[in-house]
Length: 99
Image 1 (cartoon, rainbow, N blue to C red):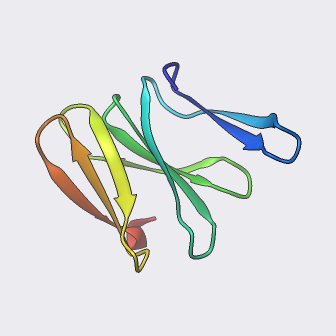
Image 2: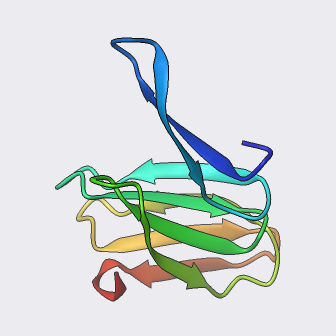
């Protein structure tokens, strides 16, 4: 969202169940780690990638390294690597082992 929050919705009730204060700026992308459903990963204009526990929605790790806004993120098919692309014209690879 534009205010740096992430809203978690219960689609059965069509109601938000959690609001996460995720970033200091616009949230640009979200990805769930689907293999074990343990992590929610977000990127932002604040140049950070944040990793949240999907059990408690608590931030457990921050990845830093971009020099400008992060526009998108994805997770490799083997769930071992996060890839991010930024306004700084860089693509970065991050090991899930670091998390």
